[in-house]
Length: 130
Image (cartoon, rainbow, N blue to C red):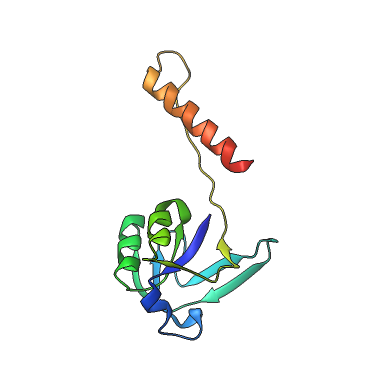
């Protein structure tokens, strides 16, 4: 799941989260965010970008520094959310799930570590879908 996150200090600076500056992550979004309710209803928001990057780690760092709000995967910010370094903004909304594709050559000659990696990925995705 991808959620909007910001520092608690930044979140307190505005009555409406849509007034918060945006750290945008190209190529996934620019200044327009499509967010979805639990029932799948889409809402579109236009925000003022303060920073744009194509690096998700840089986006996370910028959010932690209080630069703005960003749409980040929960697995990446789980520790910061637990430690209250970041807070979830608009908790009833989330980003659309992104597809993941893995391409690999046929089984013949595939190293054991690659086969195990594929098995782990497959198992984890099955668990996350159930």
